[in-house]
Length: 191
Image: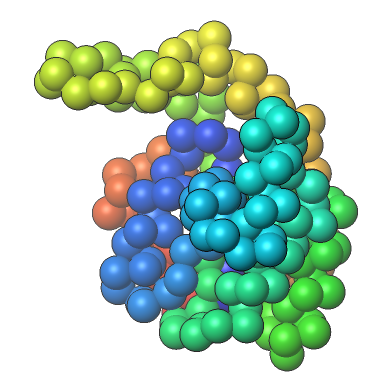
């Protein structure tokens, strides 16, 4: 089964994806991780990624789709979790075409709904706890950076909620519940 996890930064998509990898043998396709790995891979696609990133530019949809294509050509295990992709309607269309090309489809699109104010408090609190424990907090785990990241999410990614709802593929869950409750909600959606 292939799924998309949607939700703003800090909603817990990465945490839940890691649990799905562990319990359902799924493959997490995080675009950030894929780009970092490609940059150092030495492949033709990796060289393209490195050139773009070294210039400080954003990687094109074409490159990201190329990286996903490479993943779909490999072992599918328990299916794919798309984490951080698609981010735009154009990317959603491209992903749909790519999955169709491989005879695959989306089993579910899960929106992790959160209240922005509670989310900001949670992320800022998490950063403070990390610092108190002598760990390094993410540089962008502060209220101002998070508000900017949320605005980007709402401008570019939130239209996907309506897109997948119209296709009958969207299920929304409470992303602010405990990690175990969120995991149980996702499991219920996936069956």
